[in-house]
Image 1 (cartoon, rainbow, N blue to C red):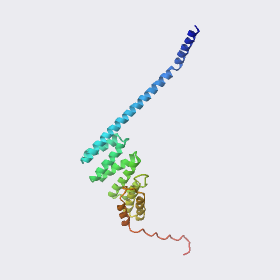
Image 2 (tube, one colour; image 1 turned 90 degrees about the horizontal axis):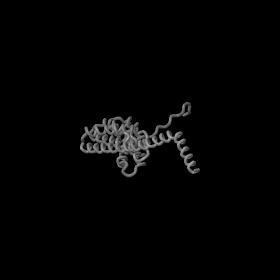
Image 3 (cartoon, rainbow, N blue to C red; image 1 turned 180 degrees about the vertical axis):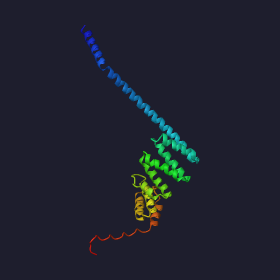
Image 4 (cartoon, helix red, strand yellow; image 1 turned 90 degrees about the vertical axis):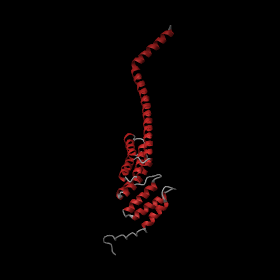
Length: 224
């Protein structure tokens, strides 16, 4: 009899606890299930988006290979518009920019590369885009803009290329002593195949000897 009484007390206590806390438990379970379902839905969406972006990029590459400018331009625009968060957007813009340079459309190439510089999520791709953008700007006789584009040498593989592009911009601006420093930095930091060492040596040679700094003017009131 006492065992039955104890069981009934436990059942009654459980009922009271559920009456007091059941709503919170139900809500907590619902939130947990919804969170798991939401995370899985997000992962599925991300995977589909990456697959879609990959397919568009592959189509873009084929259009570039076949010199179908109308198609690769439209596909590059689509990647930037619909898949900007994926690495395919920046890679597609770089590929379309190269195709535009090959086709002689430097203005279009500049727009593509500027987008990567501003919106790229990978530091190495952004550094590469800066170098290419500076070269396009130099080809457009925009040396000041090119110098601003490569204003800071990035760490990593594209540091020497950035230094070389800076040297080219400084040379175009007639700032030969500064260009010489940039070219030497490119040579000092370059590993095999990063830069054309022979071309850099020629560029240094074309600058001629370093200018001799003018003597400092005497301070005001100083005796000769």
